[in-house]
Every structure is written in structure tokens, then in C-alpha cells.
Length: 154
Image 1: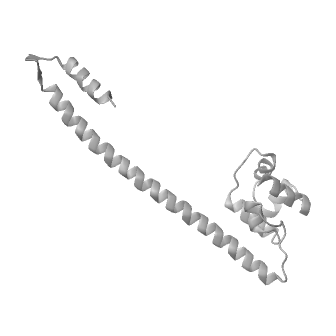
Image 2: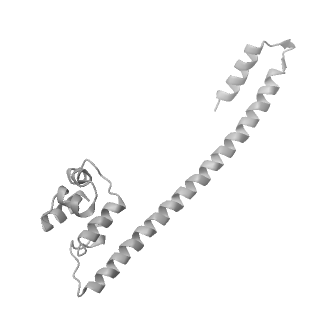
Image 3: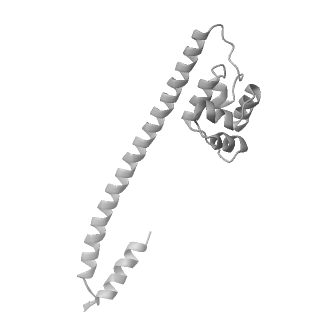
């Protein structure tokens, strides 16, 4: 993305400070992107670039495929392109939301599994601490060592 943003800046003869004035996005965001300090770019920055330079192909900007500039017959086609960019961004957000939902469900499963294991450990601990090993009453410390040894085995 760094190289493509650099190409846009060179083509339109702008710099980070000019872009800040035009888009309201901090100039260091653009500087860090071009210098490689920042690897990722926010969707708001992509939208700002595409809004400022409507002839830049959104697909090219995001993926590097195709040409930098669209070859459009009239301005109505630009609206269609911008709508497609928004649609693409919404699709990406929906996919991320789906992934987040899956992760939350998995996290809940792990929490439930942990609760079950905690109950099982509690039962095991109770059994071991109340046992009479070889006819001798074990001390509390020895019993806890037994519990620890049982629990620490894979």
C-alpha cells in the first residue's frame, strides 16, 4: 500500500501536509504510511484518498491489481465506483464481525470448559484430601502435594 499511496502523491503532486488540509487526516498518518512506519491503513484513510482523488481505482489502491486511474466515460460512473468501494468496505466489516462473533463463541466455550474443569478439580481435591492412604492419615500438605501431582500430569 505504501508504494501505491506514494504513486498517488507523486501523480497528483501532493504531500502529507496538503493531504491533511484537504482530508482532515493528520499528516503524520500519511508520512508514516509512505515511510513504512505504519503497515496498515484505516478504511477512513482509504475513503479520504478515494474521495479526494475519485479517478483512483479503489481495487488498485487496496490490492495493487489493475491501473491506478480509472478510465471513465462520465461522472455517473464515479458514483457507481464509490458505491462499490463502500459495498466492499461493508462486506469486509461484516466478515470481520463474523470472525469476532466466532471468536466470542469460542471464548465462551473455553470459559464453560474451564468452569467444568474447576468443578472436577474441586471434586478431586475433596476426594484426595479426605482419603486415608495406606491406612495412615496424610497431612494436609501431603494431600495437597498428591492433588498437585495428579493435576500437573498431562
